[in-house]
Amino acid sequence: MDSMLSLEKVTHYFGGLKAVSNFNLELPDGALYGLIGPNGAGKTTIFNLITGIYTPTEGSIKLMNESIIRKKPYQIVHMGIARTFQNLRIFGSLSVLDNIRISRHYTVGKSKHTGNRKHKESSDLVQTNLFDSFFRTRNYLKAERQITDEAIDLLKLIKLDDVMHEQAKSLPYGKLRKLEIARALATHPSVLLLDEPAAGMNPAEIGELMDLIHFIRDNFKITILLIEHHMKVVMGICEYIKVIDFGETIAEGKPVEVANNPRVIEAYLGKEEGKCS
Amino acid sequence: MGKKIFFISRRMLLFVAGALGMLLLVLFFNATGIFTDYIVQIINISLINVILAVSLNLINGFTGQFSIGHMGFAAVGAYTSATVTTLIAKVTPRLPYTEFININGYIVFILALLLGGIVAAGIGFLIGFPSLRLKGDYLAIITLGFGEIIRTIFNNIDYVGGPRGLLGIPKFSNLIMIFVITLLSVIAIRNLVFSTHGRALLSIRENELASELVGVNTVRYKITAFTIGAFFAGIAGGLQAHLLQIAHPTQYGFLYSILVLIMVYAGGMGSITGSIIAAFALTFLSEGLRTALPGLGDLMHVKIGDEWRMVVYSLLLIIIMLFRTEVLMGMREMKLLVPEEEEHHGQHA
Image (tube, rainbow over all chains, first blue to last red):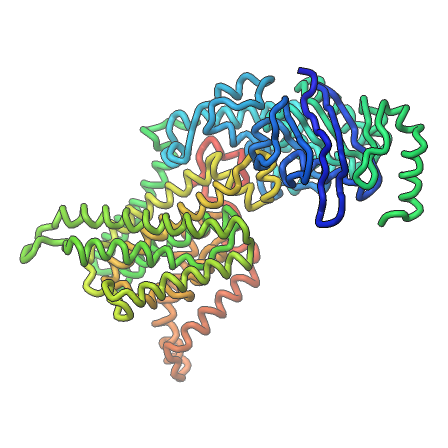
C-alpha cells in the first residue's frame, strides 16, 4: 500500500466560483507534504473537502483505497484523518486534559476502529454506553481511566503536561497551537492535516513547531499534509510541495525546485502587488 | 480512585447522606411545627424546580443549545402521567375508606411517571431535530413555538379537561417521594455530565465544528441532550401534577419556562450545583416576597400589594445579573458532586 490518501480530479464550486479545479494528490504512507499558495488559492477548501465539511462537486477522495466522499466529518475522523484549524478552534473553557480526552471519546462505545493501526492499546478499550455512564459501572470506570491515562501520556509526549489542568483559553498562543495538534493526534489518525500551524508564531516558536512536526511524524508514523505561509517552515520540513493558485495546481516538486519555479514566484509577487484581495 | 460500595463512590454516598440529613431535618421541623405545611410545600416545589433547572441546564448549559420551551416537556409528562393515574387506572394514594397506603396505587403512579418521562423524551427527540439546523435565537424561537403548541393542544383536548384543566389528580407526590426522585435525577445527570459522553456534550457547546472534527457525532449528541433533558422535565411535570392535584394548560406557559431558564442562568450555565441553589433561592424568593412586601409596607405605613411582587422579583434578578456576571457558581461544582477521579482533571472543581 503506497498511497495513504489520494485525491483524484477533485473539483469544487461555490455557486459559480470554481474554488478548486481538477486537483490531484497522492500522499504516500509516512510522507510530509506541503500545500502552499497565495491567499484565496483554495488550500483550506481542499482541507475542508478532505475532512468532509464540503462534498466535492466532482472527483474522488480515498483514504487507503476507501472512498470518504459523502461520509460525515466525524466518520472521516474515525477512519483516520485528523486536522487542525487556521484560526484556532480550542474548547476554551475546558481544561487542557479535557480537550484531549474529548478526542478519545469516540473509541468508547466501539471496541475496534480502523484508524488505530499504530496504537494497539486503543483497540482494547472497553465498550461503554450512556447506560454505563449513568450507573458508573466497572467497565465504564475502566474505560474512563484508560482515556485519562492515554491523554496524560500524550500530553507528556508533547510536553504540555505541566498545564494539563489549566483552562485551555488561558494558555499562550504557541501552546494553544500545540494543544490543537495534540488534540488532533489523540484521535489516532493515519493522516494529519495541519492548517497553517505556524500562523502568528514568533521565530522561536516556529523552530519548536518544526521540531514538533518532525517528532510527530517519526514517533507516531503519521502521514502529514500541511498548509503554510511561512516559507521557512515549508522549505525546512516538507519533502514535497504542491503550489496552487485560483484552485489550480501551478507547480509541484521538491522544495528547491518549487522555490525556483517562475510561475510560483509570479503568483506570490502578484499577490504582493494586490492582484487578489 | 475512591473505594466503591456497589456503583456508588464514597463521595457520592456522602452527598446522598448530606441530602438525606437535610430531608430528615425538614421532616423533623415539620413534625415539631417549626416548618408549616406551607413551607414544606415551597420545598416540594423547589425540588421539582431543581429537576427542571438541572435538566434544562443539560440542554442549554452543557450542550450550548438554546431551548426556552422546557415547560412543554413538563406538560407532556404531567398530562400523560395524570391521564394514567386519574382517568385510566383511577388509583388513589390510600385504599378507599381507610388510612392504609395503596401500594398498587403507588406502583401505578411510578409507572405513570416513567411513562410521562418517556413520552416527553419522545417529544424531546423530535424537537432535537430542528436543533441540527438552527442555532441560538432561531432555535429558541422553535422551542418557544413548540411549548405553546403543546399547551394549546392540551387546551383543546376535552378528554383531559381542555381549558378547565385536568382536575382531581390523586396526591401521590409528597416530600419524600419528590426528594428521592429529585436526588436520583440530579445524580443521573451528574454522572452523565462527568463522563466521556458529558465531555462530548461540552465540546459541542465550546465549538461545534471542532467537536465534529475530533470525532464527536454532534447530531446524535444534540438529540441525546434534548431527549434526556425532556425525559427529566416530563418526570418533573408528573410530580408537580400529582402534588398540585391539577394539570392546567396555563401552568405550562411561557412565563414558567422563562423562570426555569432564569434559574439555569442565575445558577450558572453548566453548573448542576448552581441550578440546585438557584432553584431553591428563586422559588423561596418568589414566595417570600408574598409576605415580605406587605410586611415592609406596614413598616413604612404604605400599602404594598401583592401585584408589586413580580416587579421586585424581576428587579432583584436584574441586580443579580448585573453584579454577578459569573452568576452563582459560574461553571464550578460543589466538591461532593465531582467524582474523585475527576477532581484534578476537569475545570469543574
